[in-house]
Length: 621
Image (cartoon, rainbow, N blue to C red; front, side, top):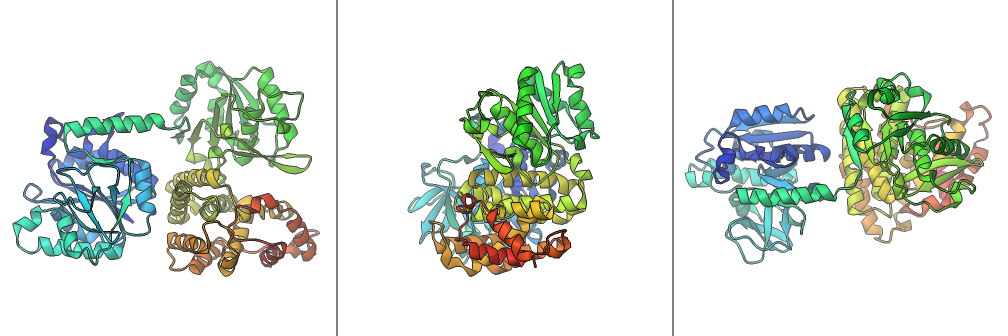
C-alpha cells in the first residue's frame, strides 16, 4: 500500500504562515508539523512508501521532508501548473506511481492515530465521515445512498454526512477513479483541471465502491485558516495529555534520553535488573556509571536464571528494600522483564507471607524496560511468568506495564541466527493468536494487523540482520505485545510450553509449530467455533488474516504460515533425535498433561484432548 499526500496548493488563506513554506509544514503542537505528523503516523501504521505532490515552495518542502530521516520511501511529483489547477491535476501528474492500494489525504489534514488505524483496517474502500459533526457550509459532505458514498462535494446537504479527505482505496476502486481523473484532465477543459478530484469520482461512483467510515468525534480535520490551526492545535494538545504514562524511546547508542528520563523522574536509587549476557554492551556500562555521571545510585541484581524462580524474585525484593531503591530498570530478554516486573509489584507487600497469595496494588514504583530481543513483547504487557515449586505461575496486573521502554536496535546485532528466527516467530504468533482470539477488539486487531504487516514486509531484512529490519522488528514486537496485552494468547501458546521444556527448543519456535497446525485445524473444524460472535465471524477473521498475508483464502493463509517455517527450516521435531525421547506416545501424553486448560478458553475453536493429541502427533512427525 502507498500513501498519497496532496501538497501542491498555495495555502493562501493561511496568510503569512505560508509566505515562505507550504501549509503542510505549519506547526500544530509541540513543534510538530502537519506533514511530519502524517508521515510518522503512516510509518507507525506500516506504510513504507509515500508519493507527495508538490507545487509552491517545492524545494523547501523536499529539504524538510528528507531532513526528517524517516525510514520511508518517498517520491515527489511536481504539478508544473499548480497555480492554475486543483489537486485533481496533481493526482493526474502522479498517476504512473499510483497503481496500488492507496491511502490518500490532503496535506493539511490532521488526524489522530486511532482514525488512521480504523480506516486502514477497513477491508473495503472507504472515506472518513462523521455522524456527530454538524454539516459544514463550505467543506466536504458525502452523500450516502444504499450504505455507499454516491457523491462528495461542498454543495450537497441532503442524505449527507460531514466528510474529510482521508481515504483508503483498494486498487480496483482506485483504478476506476484514477481513470476518470485522467479523462477529466485530458479533456482539454480548464474547468475540469480546476475542480476537485471528487468531481471525477461522482461520475463513476456506481462502479467505484467507496463506503463511509464513521469517525464520530475522533480528530480528523483540515487546517485551512489560522482559526482552524488554533482549534486543531488545542485538540492535538488534549490528545497528547490524555496519553498514558507509558513512553517509548528509540535510543540506538544515544543515551541522553535515558539520562534525561531518570533525572526528570527524580530517581535516586535504581535497581538494575540484568543478566550476564549484556555486560559486553556499552549501554550496560553506561547504566553502571550513572552514579558517577548523574549521582544516581545503581544496585545491580542478576541472581536469576532463564525461566526465573520465585525464590530469585524474593532475593531481588529483599535487596531492593535493604538498599532503599526507589525504581527498577530491566535490561534483557523476557526472563529479565519478568523478574523486574515481579520485584516492582512485590516490593512493598508483606514479606512474611507469600507474595503470590497477596493482592497486587499499584505502588507507584517507576519501572523502566530496555529489551535486548525483539519478540516477547513483555516490555508492554501486564503479564509476568515465574516458577514456584516447579510450576509456572502467571502474575498479572496493569501496574507491571513499564512506565517507559527504551529500544536500542544494536542489541539485535549479536542475536544468534536461530534465536533471531525464534523471537520473530514469537511476535508473529502473538499477532496471529491475538487476532483470532475470542477476546479480540477493534483496538487489539489494529495492533495485531500492524505487527503482522511489519514482520512480513521486513522478514528478509530482519533475518539478514540489517539495521532497518532490526528497528522495525522491535516496533512490531511492541505492537504484538500491545495486542496480547488486550486479548492474551490462545491455544498456540497454551500447547507450546512443554515442547520447549522437553526438546530444548526456543519458545517462539515451539509456539510457531503449534500455531501452524492449529491454523489449518481451525479451518477444517469451523463448526466447533466457540466465539460468541459466531461461525461467520470466525470465517471472516481467518480470511482477513489470509489477506494480510497476501493470500486469497483462509487455507492459503495457513499454507503461507507453514511456508514461513519451511523457509526458516524450523518445521517438525524428531522425537528419536532427543535423548530418552524415542517413545512418541509417552511424550504426547506428557505434552497433553502440560496444557493449562484455562489458556484454551481464548481459542475460537473447541479443542478436545483427542484434537490436541492429533496436533501434537503431527508436530512430532
